[in-house]
Length: 607
Ligand code: F6R
Figure 1: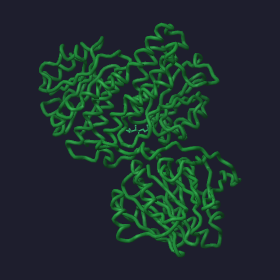
Figure 2: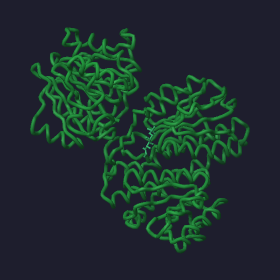
Figure 3: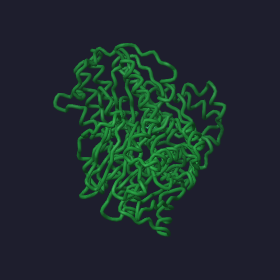
Figure 4: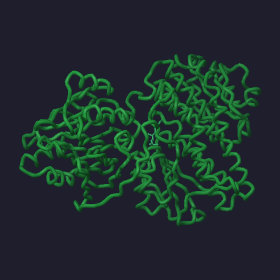
């Protein structure tokens, strides 16, 4: 949430800063702003709402300068107004911030008592005043930042510009990501490598507590104890093309259609076709000794974890606890020796999940992380890193990251089952063969796109929609409801099919579409009974099943969507496609902002 960028350049920076923000708009889009330094002046331009409003403002009031900072905001403290937009500035200092300054209240009160005047409701503005106070007292920018950083609690990535320095910016990170980029006679700061992709491929990922002084000649990095340190310069690998829409109308649509390729890519790194086995990255501990798995994640990643719980228990006979990250730490969970704590995250930066990871690490658990950003904080803190290879996910609603997470989790379940002697070599080979079929099955599911688009108008007018599923399709029902809620703003709920009759059935009438996810198989009959209970009360059912299931129960439904007949192990990956497409087309039919739905941000780096 919130994207920041800074450039110490040899050419004008305003347009390039805005271009960097455009690449980070998925991180937040409540307001945006830039500040350049020129002729001993801080030149600040800010605008409420989408980035285009800032572009209009800059066209009216340009911000000249060879050095500057910029920000795209997801509001935490204070409404998304221009006065709360970053950069925040005093006469001497301007800064942009991603994260939360948790102790901003006492800091703010103390600053006000010392006569400082605030112009925003944000937590960030206190940092601008604190640094400014030191500069006004005669300290150098470096000494000012050094004095202020230890007084801040919470999470931050900062980029700070100084009125009297048109050759230097200072950055700092604690709990929020920040990278340094190296150009030809230019140096950059950014929230991620993607923001800097067109500027440079040479990147340093700052570590927790690091702060950095960047000039046109490069960067000087200090650790939390203010010792100069050397951090590796690596090739970022981020390409500008990876974050363009191509021929698609929305990033979400592009990412839904990328799934066969990225799931195949992900599976390739976990499956050995030669001997049809599952191969995890080299690790120096024995997974067969694991006696319990604790899964922790948020949102869509949590639903991937719910599916994995079925798999770990069914295949590996391992007991599994699962929690949403925001609840986990504070309920003081019992974590016994020998446990594997498994964290699932697209971004690898979600604050609640990261805090839960650190809690488990301190409690002596082995830490496994399924993550899409291999340079993220979670990836760096894992004992067992299980990357998904979904590529950058820009659409705020997670799609391809989810199916790639499921692919990794299925491979992990199979591997644990082998390690625990629960499946034979033949069974492992059979599992591998089923997984290998996934990309083709995803393609088959995607071929129903037009049909799903054509039925979106049946759902778009609804005020409420219910999703039902059983077994591993229950988390899919929850995921379907989440997708619909977040991009079409229609209220939706997911239920375990059998749970309907214990209350939610009271909601059913002809105005509430019910989406039933039910591949044919052992649980089908029971789900069909629940579906009949809905229909008997006038409910309008959309049945998503395979040909066999539709032949058996499709009659009288409002609509049916036919999925390929697949092995139950890969069904959750395949059935993710129609729920994603349905949410997507309903949102398009309603004319909402699919890639940037209101109030949301891609990476939630505050608790
Ligand atoms: C929903 C969605 C969110 C994320 C959640 C966790 O479409 O994208 O629910 O899944 O914020 O984010 P990560 O996976 O980055 O930890």
